[in-house]
Every structure is written in structure tokens, then in C-alpha cells.
Figure 1 (spheres, one colour):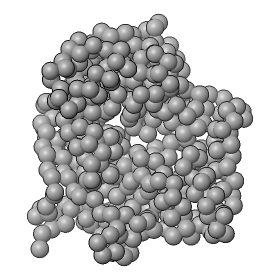
Figure 2 (cartoon, helix red, strand yellow; figure 1 turned 90 degrees about the vertical axis):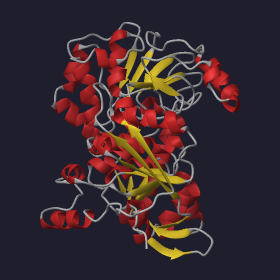
Figure 3 (cartoon, rainbow, N blue to C red; figure 1 turned 180 degrees about the vertical axis):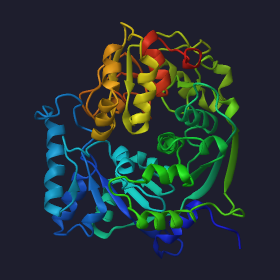
Length: 467
């Protein structure tokens, strides 16, 4: 009998019931909720006179709609205010732990789970948000769900879910100077396309993946969803355990050592078989940027936008439409293109390591006059740490301002919208038409690339500028 993959081990341990020829009933360890996808679920529960089955397994925080300045005053956008207030009310009614605005634990749901030690290896984790795959960096099975499924988990702590196929993506070798986790995942998606992961849960492996910090691993797993995958995960190891150790809701003392012993078993067996396996060389990856309107339309910054003849016939129509929206021409160099906005933040790159990388690069330099920059911590904890480390002062001296936590300019659901026609280099995860605001144009890149752009005012490969 063939061995099991890491995904199999976690999934199988949580199956309550198999429905023959259908989905599994899967038990969920942690349910994360925010203000956008939970109101309808709570309305459904209340209409049926039901209760939340295990409120202690649910954690709530507002993130999508919140402003990133003046969070101490009332939210002036009516819909945003309504949704945040509704979340507060629903959590009070159902006894759910809420980290509301100005709470020291508030932040983007996929940033606070890991940093508070809520996210742990071997768990099943869901949230009404596609980027729940972030938590897979800890060796958990984590995925986004729809509003009706949010209701299902609230009332039963279980979900009906078909078991995905399994893929392993290996990245082997050493990364070049200036190449980060964000470049790895943008490179992978550019190679396999935005549908290359459809139907799969992806395990990321190989020496380049093992060399990454937990923040880097979270960035990789976060964007699994952009390849069409159901989620992504990475085998927990010493790096994982050290990250979790001492965090607020992590096991303590002897209980932690026991947990580590258990987590050690969470790895793919030598003889396990994947439905698909791919290997990439780390040396082939250079600092990346997107040029189109999906995350698969990416290339090295030092390269050119592809010529139309480089695109398969079936994709040429969407390629032309995408370039028309972006205002770009096929075949032209990317480096040197003037940029209007820089956004650093989101559940992809709003962690302390990301702010450190950006701050280290801009230290002693000045923001370009043509750039409007929004530097947004992913949580109150990240904000506090950045201030304690003096990153806010470094940013200020270079002409930047550290804003308050939230999803911010990742998506046009709050005040931080990129104006129509303006070009933004963004550390977030999606570059769809209108994603950052109606008519906004988005190029996805790493915090390091964003820093290079912020000081030069144009698309710039950071690798030549690193001290």
C-alpha cells in the first residue's frame, strides 16, 4: 500500500464521514470570520433559530472594509460601517471572540491567525475568503469557503467537501540576490498558468522552499489560489516550530514539546504518490512583475512584455484585451515604465518581514516625487513591532508614512482605492481589472521591488540596487 502525502494525513484525520461517490464530511478545527462574508451566514442561522455549535473554534476580526487612517473615529463609509457593526453584533449574540478595531490583536485575518499562534500544524482551517490557503504554510489544510458554507461550519463545525487531487511543486537550489518568496510564486504561476492548479491541493517542497522564513512560506501558500488550486501547504519543520513557540495561543512548556513530537509526523511518506509533480530550478527565477490582468501574466522585470506571437493562439484574444486595459504594448521592455502608486501590504505581504525589507531598502533614500505610497501593516501586532523597531521613523525620513492595519488597497472595498487609469505596483495577490479601484491598473511584485519602484518612480529590478 502506497504511503500518504502530508495532505492525505491531515485530511484523513478530519474525515467524519465519507459519502459514497460524493464529498466527505470534514471536521474543521478553526473557523476564521470577517465582516464581508459572515453577515448573510449569521442572518441564515438567526432566521432558523439556530446557534453557533462551537463558538470557541471561531475567531473574528474586521479587515476588508476598515480605513487605514483615523481608526479611532467612526467609519464614514456607510456600507463599511454597517458591515463592521454587524460583525460586532453577531459575535456578541453568538459568544464569538472578536478582535475589533483598535483591539491589540486586530488585523487581516490571515496575518493574525499565524502571529497569535492560532494557526498550527495538522489543523483544518476555513474562512469565507479565498486566501485562507495562507495557513497551509504551517502544514495545515486551509481553504476558502462560500457564504453558505460559512453558515454550515458555524452550525455544525463541519463542511461537505470533495477531496482534491494532489500536486507537488519542488523548487530546488539557491535563490539569487533580490529574489524573494513573492518572486518564486509569481514565477510558478507564470509557468503553470492561472488554471494549472485547478482541482489540486499543492504541496511545495525542495531546498529553496525549505530555506524560506515562515513569512515567505505564507506568501507562497497565500497565492496558491491564483493558480486555480484549492490550497497549498508546506511540511512543518524546525523553522515552523520556532515561529510558533511562545505565541499567545500556542501550547506552552511541556504541552509545546508534546505538540512538536506530534507535528514531526506531518510529512509526506517517501513512497507517497502525487497526481502531478513539477520541479523548478531556483536559479531560473529572477525578480518578477506582472504586466497583465491576471497573476499568471508575469515575467522577469529585466525582460519584455511577450510579443503576440509568443502567446498560444487560444490566448491571444484575452492577451490583447489585457494589454489594452493596462495601456501596454506587446514586446516592450518593462524596466523604466513610470509608476504612480506603490502599495505594500495585504495578506500576501503585510507582515513584519515585508515592512523590514521595504524599510531596509529605502533607508537613506527618498521617495520619488511622482509616487503616492501606501505602506500598510497587516495587523496591530505588526504595526506595534514596526514602531518598536523604528521602521516608522526610517519610512518617515524617506518620505513615507506607516498607515494603520487593514486589507487596504488590495481590493476596492475601503477608502484606499487606486484612481482610474493610474498604474500601481502592488505587493498584493490579484491584478484583475478594477481590483484596486475602477479603471486602476495593477502590477504585482515583491516588497523589495516595490521599494525600488518607490524610490526610482519607475519599474525597477531591485537586484542591481541592493547593497
